[in-house]
Length: 170
Image 1 (cartoon, one colour):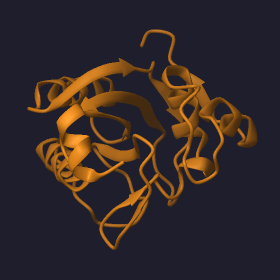
Image 2 (cartoon, one colour):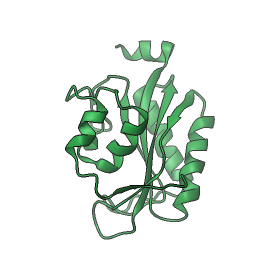
Image 3 (cartoon, one colour):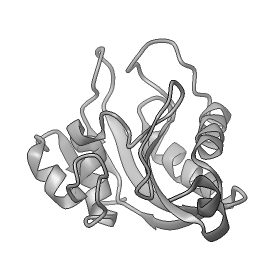
Image 4 (cartoon, one colour):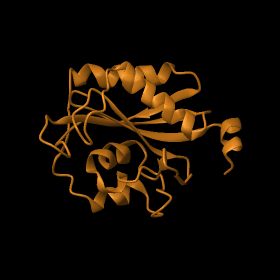
């Protein structure tokens, strides 16, 4: 697919959301609402929320979810919008894998593969992360991850999901 063709017809993109600082039960829905009102981004699907163990330094558990959006933005512009939304919600980048008010990761952009210094699609660690794959499999089980050629519902079977717990009230 050409990048300019993506703008003309719109493409689907998968985004992971996470939060473990502040009121995550308020932050995630507000971040999703912000995505939904962003020009050229249209919310198509949202997973439930999951409580997950943090990866990295000791810190509180996360709330995670995924959304599928239709967008008319090129991948780099979509990423810039996601970073701006993180900042709006008080995201401060202090340490790698540290706690955060909001984390938005661009996981997939149609079937595109991009590897630049500022953007990697598919997200380089998504296949290792149950906290990404479990909610993504809920809303996009048959999406093919373009590097492995595997569908999400099969990738989730390859990771340990014991630290990913559905929030029943989400």
